[in-house]
Length: 138
Ligand code: ATP
Ligand code: MG
Image (tube, rainbow, N blue to C red):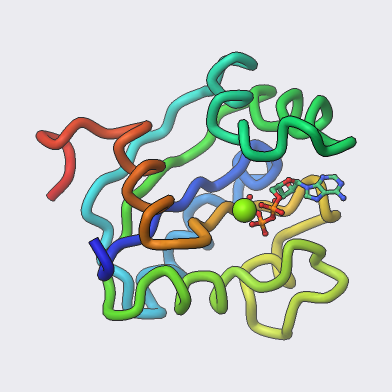
């Protein structure tokens, strides 16, 4: 599992038509897509996915945002996938994201920040399995 990470292109980026450009950046950075689907989270499912943030003041806003429109979920493969993908997406707050990162290019704010990336190998596995059966992971 250490060569895999999980990502979601969030509703803001979907609405703005950035899905194709973001997938292109992901491929250009050397990640192989081994599972992918466009889907929409219910508020309940979004809450479950981000349950770790339940006690944070922005949780309600986060759940509402993540369930307001379609997302693209994908499992990605590359050496050092989790760390390298966090570098590619950039800081949570786009104002602090480095030049050339996905969030610098496409994120509007700390809340609506275009893309998710797993923060550990363990979570990459849990999050990938949240969206994809083993039969859908290539
Ligand atoms: P993600 O888990 O989506 O990849 P992250 O790991 O960079 O993002 P987290 O701290 O896990 O950041 O926060 C999860 C998500 O919650 C953020 O991506 C953002 O959409 C939202 N969020 C985080 N902090 C804030 C905040 N201060 N105000 C509003 N929304 C926030
Ligand atoms: Mg996170």
